Structure formats: structure tokens, C-alpha cells
Image (cartoon, rainbow, N blue to C red; front, side, top):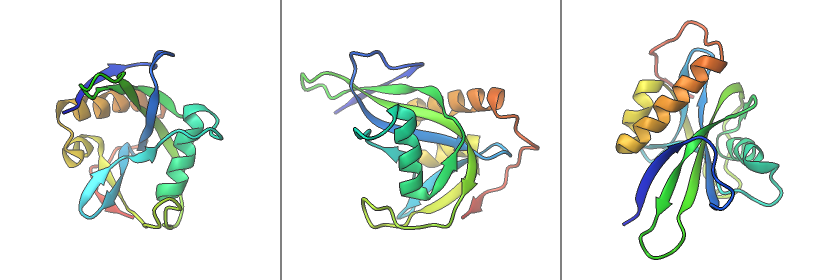
Amino acid sequence: MAIFHWVDGNVPNNIEITQVYGIIFTKDGRVLLRKEDNKYSLAGGKPEIEDDGIQGTLRRELIEEINVKINDPYMVGYQLVDEEDGSSPYAQVRMTALIESIEEKKPDPATGLTYDRVLVPYYKASELLNWGDVGAKQIETAFFIAKKNFNFTKMTNEITIL
């Protein structure tokens, strides 16, 4: 079974990045989650050669999966994953950004599925993702960075399905 360690900050050059996911916020401080079959997740995916770095991966994946555009993303940190099978550990990056626009839902070109999108207060995101302490730390760190950089308007506790 894989072991996950949360690390704040940038990924060292010698560690492969296999995922880039976004903890993205509205101006009122809510997090946008992707919902499929009553399970919540962050939107994101695997870096591709044509992406302009991990920021480009995040932008592309957000448009493909949930049709959302973002402002410039900030690094939150990464999960260092050890499969405990002798292979090298790898990184699953988490970034945060302010949502620029939420467009109409459309199918993900990779899967053909159209995902629901749900806006939730940041403290509710951790509960819905159900990733334990490692997930809670990711959300808390992202919220700290977002609060510092995004000038939230009046924050709301409302949950909205888009």
C-alpha cells in the first residue's frame, strides 16, 4: 500500500511529477470540487509534453474536466508518494488559483464524462474529499496561500451545485 507524505513548497528536480491538481477558489473563498457518482475530487491530471510547465497542465486540465479558467496559480506543495515496491517516489502536485470564469459544463475529452461542480466552504472541502490528515493539510495550506493573495470578498458558507 502506498504511503503519502505532504510536503509544502516546490518539487525537487530529481522527483517525477505524475499529477497536477488544483485547489481553486472563488472570490468569496469557496473551493470548487469536481463530483462524479457522489464522490468528490479536485480537478487536474497528468502533465503532458505540450503543457507549459505545471501551470499549463493545471490550466489545461481545469478547462478539459470542469471548463473553468483561472488566474495565475500558486504552488501549494505536493504529496510524495512511495509505492513501497522499490520504485522511486513520485510527486502529486497541488496548486491554488483564483477562478477567473466558470463556463458551461461540457464533456471531458479524455473520458467523455460531464462532471458536476460544487462550490463549498474551504473547511467543508477537506471533509468531502475524505483524504484524512494529508488532505486536510493540503486544503489548509491552500486556503492560507489563497487568503493572503486573492483578496477574498465577503466569505460565504453556502454550498452551490453548478
